[in-house]
Image (cartoon, rainbow, N blue to C red; front, top):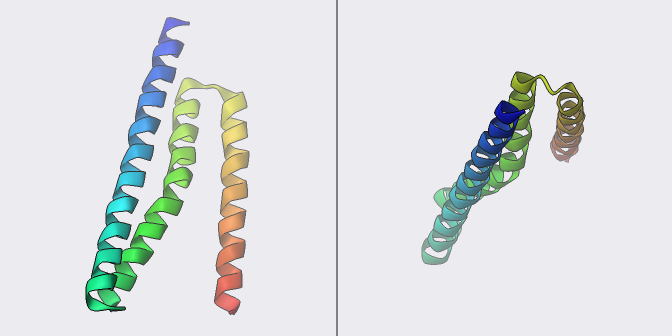
Amino acid sequence: MRSEDGALESLERTLGRLLRGGVLSAAVLLAFGLVVSIAAGATPLSAGTLTAGLIVLMATPILRVVVSLVAYARMRDWFFVATTVSVFVLLAVTVLLAWSKLSRG
């Protein structure tokens, strides 16, 4: 039971660092894109940086699900593996539907 507690604590620390890093990276990209947009107007650099910031912000929770899935599989906690897989499938379907709708115009 002790090793399981240690594994959960390690997972929590890893997820905390992942979320913090994702949000900070997105914030830096968005702030830089905003500053460039204000200073130079709408340029490819500002648009690309703002887009990258939004993508990083949206990808962070998805990456959290993937990291959780791997961790639960290593712990052989099959209930949480199944739950995390279902969350990942729902996220993937949502992203694919949004992408197809965006592609159609």
